[in-house]
Image (tube, rainbow, N blue to C red; front, side, top):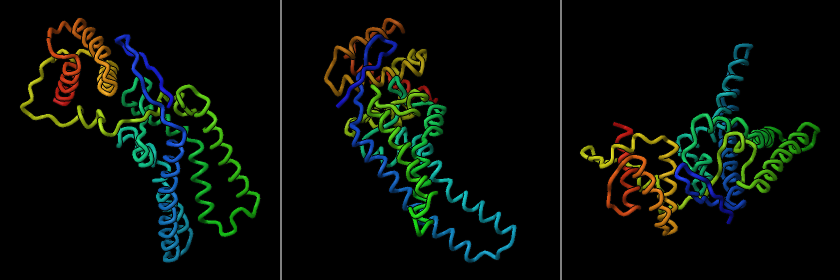
Length: 271
């Protein structure tokens, strides 16, 4: 499994596991399958509406609007799920992979949008599915043959980029500065640190709010990597730099210190 090292503001390289190609492919196939079944259902709904419509010019415009609304979930599938599910679609969640920014933190809204706008191969696959469902004689004419070849060409282009790039990025990831990483579902930081804290929780180190979001993402990554690898040296190096920068005195073990910092930030950032 490929591993990349990402430098942090604390001069410590954090390792991230790049998912194997088959995981990405299966994730895509799962998402495409979900989109396919949705299109089948949406197609039947559309046919039923057309059958019961009264006809006329206005009705024709209404049908176009309804068709667009029914297709909208396909266009927005990835961007909406990745924003609301912390960098995952249903396929990615099942395959244990996630979109993060190049510092290992949660991508910004604009990064998700850029990534979505450049999902060229997915758009062509969606068009291929629509033609597959709507055209009984699929593949028997020049237009459908062109769509098939175009979809395959864009898909192959994305595959070549993923396989050949050092970080497994396709064009949307490169421009959005995001990467796909494997996640450890049993020790997912989102489930262990970023959770609801009691209203009477008392932060130990309010100085944490002086750090930037990029610093917090770095602390998250270092804490998670240190726990996973059992590398206390990495955690101790980061804890030492943070204490010096924020003028904090603490005798807590490094991992515990970083965990409390993250909890403090989680509490203070929403108060």
